[in-house]
Length: 287
Ligand SMILES: [Zn+2]
Image 1 (cartoon, protein in one colour):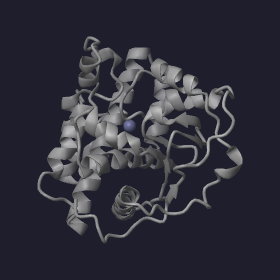
Image 2 (cartoon, rainbow, N blue to C red):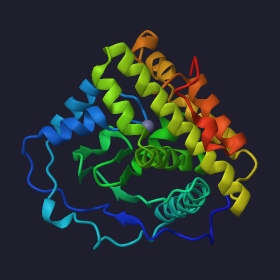
Image 3 (tube, rainbow, N blue to C red):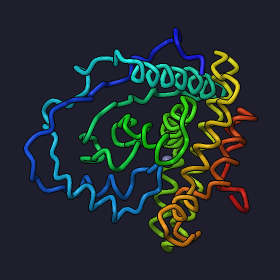
């Protein structure tokens, strides 16, 4: 990606290296909510995540995490994320304006190990997530290393896709989609609830693609190979792929994010059309 020299966002809180408080504090209901409700990019099993959360037994010193005192990142990877976030701000402000709406910019928190959010405590083990309670994207940068080494999806556009996907959840929140889906899930059977979750996640993938299309139009951000990087990342974290690589059988009824084919198809649709109205994963007969 051609990101150097581009505008950086004012909305990044660099909380990396913030000291974790006293160990051994019980994980409360908030953390449970994070585990169950947050949009996990990797689609990991909530029970596994709960165990991971529990075993880390972290508590973050609440008093220091109000946000404003955390400065902008100064290192390369932090500034890269900041440029991507700034680009999502420009693109979504513009697209919302064209739809007669006002875009509210989310903030993005860089953290290491564990973080306190309006959705509760979360350890880095949960992966990147968006918390609708405080309009913030939470990102532990070690996930990028995992994307590269564990999921075989290296590259800066793969990383940008991760950020854009979480911002996609923010867009869904502003549009009221998340709330409608949440309500429908409460009335649904477990299988139906999973199917709704898949459509929500695929829409976030498509919206990430919409961002990529416009970022490229206005800032010429993409280089040859970038689209392929993104598609590879989307495929690498498809539920079928994750189930296969963990030795579990492929069970479509348990999917929460969609298969590799679905995820790359919806990302591609956004990337090629740039049309957010084309991201209606809920009307598609098969996502
Ligand atoms: Zn998601």
